[in-house]
Amino acid sequence: MLLSQSEIVPFADDTFGAPAVRGFLHKPAKPLDAALVITHGAGANCEAPILVGVARHFAQEGFTVLRCDLPFRQARRYGPPLGTSAKDREGLRHAVLALKRIASGRVFLGGHSYGGRQASMLAAEEHSIVDGLLLLSYPLHPPRQPDKLRTSHFPKLETRTLFVHGSRDPFGSREELESALQLIPAPTSLVIIEGAGHELGFARTKRNEADDLPKRVFESAARLFVFPE
Image 1 (tube, rainbow, N blue to C red):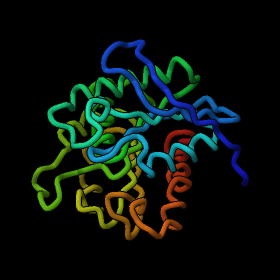
Image 2: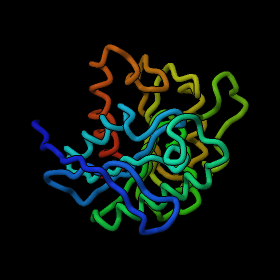
Image 3: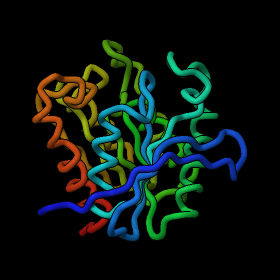
């Protein structure tokens, strides 16, 4: 099926005060009553190829999509977040509120790696803020440190959550994730991308496998979020 094209425009919103919302808005040609906020990992920004690919496909399917920079990245062009997790979650909260002002229907929240972790922590803190979570390469634990699990908030998650994970991701194995998902009381789904690492194929020179990822993510999200059984 030929997907409709979407318009991409810079986005900024200071309505809710600091931290401000900064990023890009994907405006679908034929909008559905659905929207998505998506953000980046610790070493990237909202221009990360994986975010652009997923945002484009969701917008072509009718979602209004905001891909945004977290507050730590707005403050510094390079470098990881340093003690900014609470502020980054507040930035995501403002992004969700900003998108709700311009899009109708259900709103979903997601992110890659660190961004996904902050999205899930926000949803655990505010159960009704979004209708579903899309977590790309959730950093279950630091590489080679499986005892340092980042799951303390999982039992508080009441939001439907889709995990998309590479089979070679050093931040968590398939078995470790399957075990961790048992802690979440809400419906969850796990999609394993065979042979992919933490970037889910988007860091490779060979792009054909990665190019299929946004479609697969959308189809899985549609089953869990849009048309749940």
